[in-house]
Image 1: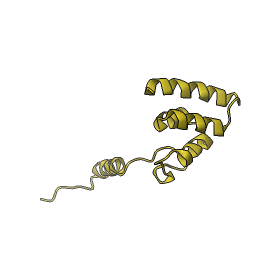
Image 2: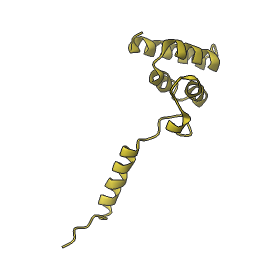
Image 3: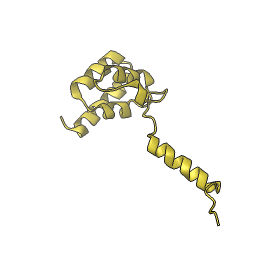
Image 4: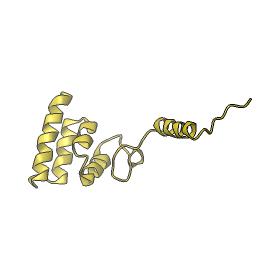
Length: 97
């Protein structure tokens, strides 16, 4: 199945979930049968209950990679880069003459 097709499906199902026509369990079943985990967690970014259920049910996913709202945590490289930028702005790395 193509990613763009799954994106359209997930968008449609997000509207149906919002209208209370589908349950969390239905969304998870649909996501598991269609694949593309990242599409589903992106489309359902405002629904932590869905994101949590997706993480718990998709093979190969773990809560350790997600923040408290079940969004992706920043990578350590990105955090290090931000910290380094902060230190440079604070003139922490002064040249020694």
